[in-house]
Image 1 (tube, each protein chain N blue to C red):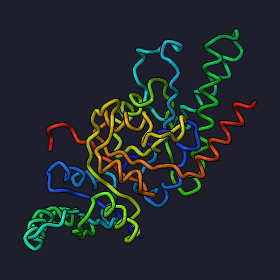
Image 2: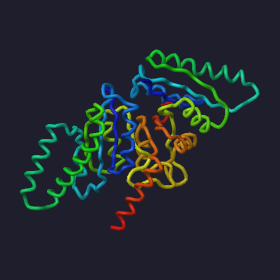
Image 3: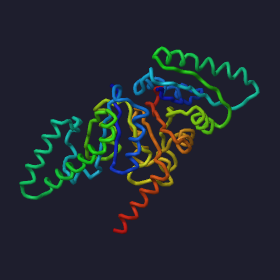
Length: 135
Length: 186
């Protein structure tokens, strides 16, 4: 039986940090990964999708080499809403993402997308707070 | 083996994460380490500078521990005896909690530490070289207006390891609240 893991990414290298750690805590042969990029809809949708595909292909290949079953999705809209919705649609067991834990006005806080995802998700969320400057 | 550290604080909230273990981890690939941190002030114990001993409470250490506890109870009643008794009851509770993993085929390791919760969790994670920390978003302090309790947020801030967070269900929040009221009415 597969553990289904949804991995939300953006166009930053920072967001990919989680991808390098997945095989440290998941068994690749028992894991099905969905790499998700949520973009805002612009005029040149085809151009954007080609660019995202180029960005994700390399990672997808690297993850396959580690033994993961992996595919990717591109969705349009508000990041946190699309992440939670897809997790539900795919019956994901967990969501794994890179985030900042930084100082807010009065306290330490998560990045805004991470906060919204944790707020809405009913499944466990794995957060990675990579070393500053590493990515 | 993949090592997963699960910090518990004795509340139902913190233990809610255990129900997720069987769907995400397997006994033949993952070692689960249950950690109870008692945030008792270090100065009460007077061991602030004692090095962190992360040797798990396996059967041998458990035997040694229990026999040393029995020995101490014959001595004059004092802080030492009270502390030993406290440790023993906390460990017993932790091992009992681990029962729900043992019936699934896991052989969890047990850790009991004293100190600041977040700092200690991160220190144990580093010392034992775990791959993942898995914990509830809120612990003993219960669900509040904040999305994440301070201990969980501090762990995430201090550790560069992946941290798995689950938000306890609202119905559990209700139970915990009722229990809190029951305590306060006692």
